Length: 530
Image: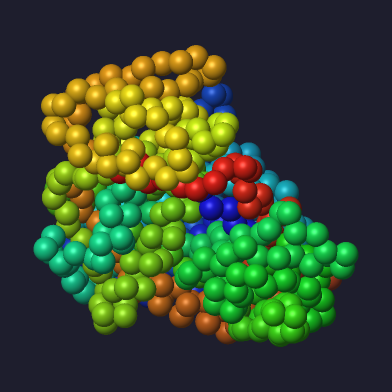
């Protein structure tokens, strides 16, 4: 797998400060959502909406992102809105249609302490236990109730009930033009293959149906040369990933970074931590023995929102839960989505892409390995990854296995073409044997060949979620102005009481963005294991 510099400034996704359009509508055009409290191991947990369709609620903006009611801010006492949240009786009103909702899960005592600290003008040490995202397809006049668990599971119930708004806000649904990409409209071959592999991994390793929220890419997008030594502390880059922040900045493989920002930060970690939207980002690099200044107005790399399932019926289900990745799969997924998004945007697609694929056979054997020299002219393949629903998986190969021979054909040269050809040319039903070493033991794996499978899927990519993200970030300055004005109003009306602090788009950076550039030192080349 690739190694990257990593920034966590946006790890919580779209924590934006722009409100959703809200309006009052007739009773037949809405439904209600109640986030029920729950007991977990003797603790009471409750929830509140943080984001709806990627945006903070307009009502929350009017409370200056504190989550407190106007009455509470004016009087310094916990009011009815907070009490309804604390006892799980607060209702949110939703327009019929699709809604992507991000919810904070709190311990009840922690949220009450958070409210109290905020009213006292102090920074609270309390924070949510987790964020959970889900997609809800809302119908007219339904009362929805949702309960969240610590592991992110969502339990939904609903019953028919007349929706009465009075003067409450209604959360608008997602509206999007749909461009459906038919199965026959393939991506470029390499991109198509990577999409099929990643979808197999999502079904096999994550969950068969899910929502992946729009968010800023966590990866700076360059690979550091750990073996490079420079007396002045320069950092040499082995490679720069396309569609990454490093690529947007203009970094190239071979560059040696010698200076971070102006005023200069001591390392990349400090620079990434200090970055705010539209702030100028500067680096100095040595390139071909010449000093080159690189700068850009900082805009994060945004990965679009995605919903996926095995078929159309899956995608149309009322509730679709959010997805959590391990780091390796998240990296692979992000790179793929950024490339696919760029491909279709260059073809002038907008709105919603619905990519549909049927079950099909895959010619690949289904392993990714590293060629390793044993001694003299003898080589082996160390298995780095076994793809789901593949022949490699069926025969029983595991990560870390050392392949010595296939059908008694040993690797006596650094070229492994003949091994790939042996695997590629196997006929369905043909028996074959792979000799391996596993944890110091010699094992022969024998199986009748079955072709790998690419599973069917229905994938929806919200292209406009990228533009929406940037539009909202661009509005942050006017929102901050409102917060500043309100802060002054508080000071004038409440004497010396400390004022609430405004939320920022930025967050803490990682303790160190540098990672090893060579997890397998001494290995020589990669095999796709066809």
